[in-house]
Amino acid sequence: MEKNQPNTGKIGWTYGLIGGVISIVFTLMLYFMDMMAEAATNIGIQLVGLAVLIGVIVIGILQFKKINEGFITLSQALKIGAAIALINGIISLAFTYLLTQVIDPALGVSLLEVGKQQALQQYPQMTDEQWEQGLAVQKVVSYAFGIILPVIIGLVIGLVTGLIVKKQRPE
Image 1 (tube, rainbow, N blue to C red):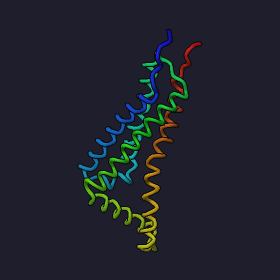
Image 2 (spheres, helix red, strand yellow; image 1 turned 45 degrees about the horizontal axis):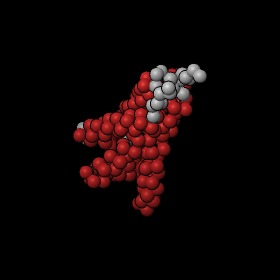
Image 3 (tube, helix red, strand yellow; image 1 turned 30 degrees about the horizontal axis):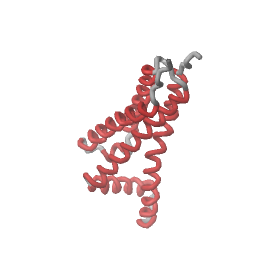
Image 4 (spheres, rainbow, N blue to C red; image 1 turned 90 degrees about the vertical axis):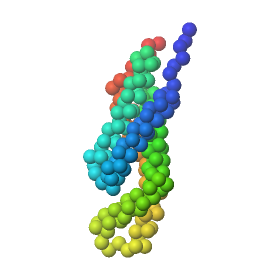
């Protein structure tokens, strides 16, 4: 009698949600410490967020292997890594949008002002019209990047973890 194989999608959803909740808590911590503007430029803060994503992906892959009687293929590890990262990225992006556009619109305005000051320091000849054009493009790119980059990271972490822990079921 053949046993049901665990579902990579279920693990992806579960651990993606866990990662998303952790990302929300981390963002709220930065918000209440008034460090949101610093978070955009501070590599240390960004590395903490990346470490959380990597940790959740690795734990999700290891959990799948555990419930699958110690077996996992590279393909399954890649699927799990991408799924966790996608769900986590969507949740993080949605919460950040909610925070800066609904909960505290003044935060969104202040983050834009910080960005404008940084851009003017790099490009002092920039006009207000050029800033507005760049801002319109940047909004679209940042939302796309907020989904695509985590998935790429998820695939890479899934690949590395999968190569380390893969174990084929004997036939």
